Length: 203
Ligand SMILES: C[S@@+](CC[C@H](N)C(=O)[O-])C[C@H]1O[C@@H](n2cnc3c(N)ncnc32)[C@H](O)[C@@H]1O
Image (cartoon, rainbow, N blue to C red; front, side, top):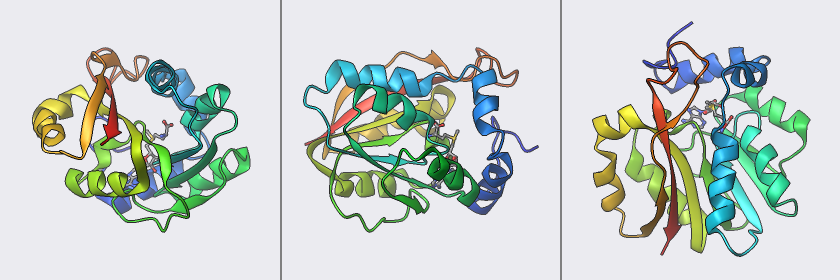
């Protein structure tokens, strides 16, 4: 198994890696005590006052984030996208999404409506061009729509992520969490690799 912590390879390698993991992904993440979906929803609950109508869940995986999200926003229409076909078929089985797109989050989706919220939970690690990603998210969002994402603390420092965020005059920072445990019961991550959860608003 290639290393989740140190890197899987290029986007094709990532796709194959998640295709192979699709059947056991949910159980593994449960075993590793993955809490980012629930923690992200708690942040939305705190800061988003108007009930969102449309959510776009980028790198949606099997739908763990949307499963949590719909407990709070049961009437929101959710679309998702992911690079892995097998992961997407798991999401499809769960029946939580209106439309699912097999697409890298660095490529443009032909959307049918703009979104109140765009999410990218547990996947910023795989982003190769942050400015293109932010350009796309900005395009997907309505004015005053929200972008919620996680980013690993070690990569935050390596990439100087503060500067990336500061360079985006089209987004305002609403909230940045303290470093939180990410996969505490995975021995490579344990309490060494943390994430921040960030909420931005499109101006
Ligand atoms: C750790 S999982 C997170 C999935 C889900 N958001 C969750 O919280 O369970 C990372 C996901 O990112 C997807 N992924 C990786 N690189 C991607 C890319 N460039 N575009 C779209 N999805 C990607 C993988 O296929 C995988 O489903």
